[in-house]
Length: 320
Ligand code: AN0
Ligand code: CP
Image 1 (cartoon, rainbow, N blue to C red):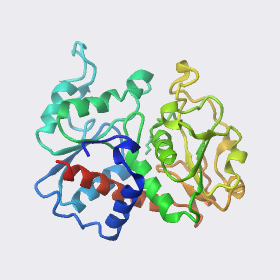
Image 2 (cartoon, helix red, strand yellow; image 1 turned 60 degrees about the horizontal axis):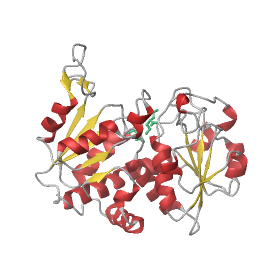
Image 3 (tube, rainbow, N blue to C red; image 1 turned 180 degrees about the vertical axis):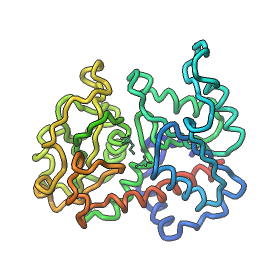
Image 4 (spheres, rainbow, N blue to C red; image 1 turned 135 degrees about the vertical axis):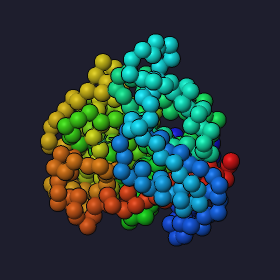
């Protein structure tokens, strides 16, 4: 595998899931694969889970790891070509990428949507520069439009907890005080559309996700209807994706607290499991009792981030 940005990079999901369970049974099975190989993790944004689980995954494979927080201690990076660099940015990404690539074999990048320009975000301008100019395998640790390590961990979790062959999985929008990217819901939809699940998306009007990710999924604007008979509820906030009204891209259109997932919402379901990628704001997205219930999978989901990252890094090492 030379890049990992979406579900199609994984190929057959059944095979990917069986590799995940092989690694979960013995996470050190491939501990010699990464000897004398270095994984560089570059963060333009904050992280707890991705930062820790990806380092752990690299170490499971015997790799060395370097972590760079671009905004803490490195030179401020210019990302636009043609800019007269007379401001606060001392270095250009076009030099920084090949320089950083010298010191490693595989690169992970976290670079969230900036919400300045929809086209820049949806063409993955920053991530694609790493792919183009590093000459190294690159994986997304949440880029502008996707978070495929999270979605793979979510799929692993659903596969572990499902009670029937084809569970009903609902992705629901929920309220949040700040504008958040669409990366997590996009990738979740990307994966669920290829998985053996009955997939429904529910959100207020105006929050339609990009058709590249929604594909044939059923979109239901009535949240209660969507929740009926659900086996898994996956909650996430996202800001306006600007599909129907490009001028609203990145805006908060709705703060309706009736969309928060609480015990009443869960009572509409088939005793569903609750999922969220974390970090989560309690009593905005989900009530205390729902996230603390035995049916909450937020912790096992986060634990599976180590597994999804180990599978992806293993495949990248095998292709070096
Ligand atoms: C980020 C987001 O919504 O994309 C990261 C989630 C994994 N969340 C926040 O910024 C709170
Ligand atoms: N779920 C997730 O990616 O969490 P972090 O932002 O803490 O890495």
